[in-house]
Length: 335
Image (cartoon, rainbow, N blue to C red; front, side, top):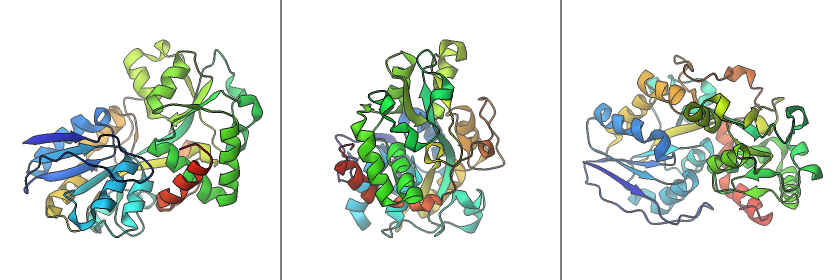
């Protein structure tokens, strides 16, 4: 049996919601903050790897984290597959994630797993600026978050306020620059009247269609568009700021076993599958992400080496303070 349930009207600000359930006691139940379009085919393959029926429930990563915390020990979930480290850390901080075996943790570099051993990265993605070269030259683009709020960009920047990657980015600003800096930056960002979009895909499409000079997204959406249309058919281009600035944050998607799961053995098999060459090749070649397992290298897409991105030096476990981030976003009118 395979049953998929989608979330309905969930609020990203760590509020609870209701999920439709259709599982049996013997299913492995995955709460997935990753989009079905990106990972649905991969999770179809996971059922053979774990040996039991799998049910996947989809929603935003922050929404799924809220659902897990609301359900507590009564949750049906066995596995949390998150779009970002922050949501995993938020659930782990409340004691809701089980410790992973050493052999599983050893499949990824140390900076791609939780220090408390309760989640592990499955893939990595970089924050980038998607821009329209017909409107703005690349050398004019912001090289730092301070430059993003220059008044000359008023009404010209796209962002996705409810997207987990945006919230994780803002959390990184708080961690790297401090609360006062983050609050002031968000105030200036809001005053610059940025354009709101539902997701990264909508931002990129607006840039590509000539409706937006530039937007803040994750890198892999551009590569997916190029795979569909060819590079010549895509007008938008990518700019990487580098220099250790939060604009170049490299975040991870990751997975964790829920504490008290009745299917912990199957859940651990699922984690191993997501770190296997088969799954990691999916992330590299299908979703255009950086594999978390260093034994698998990007192939189909021409990604720059992850070591060349000049990402900020940050402990990804510190991205767990989502509630504080949501509070600042609400204060600034950016939630």
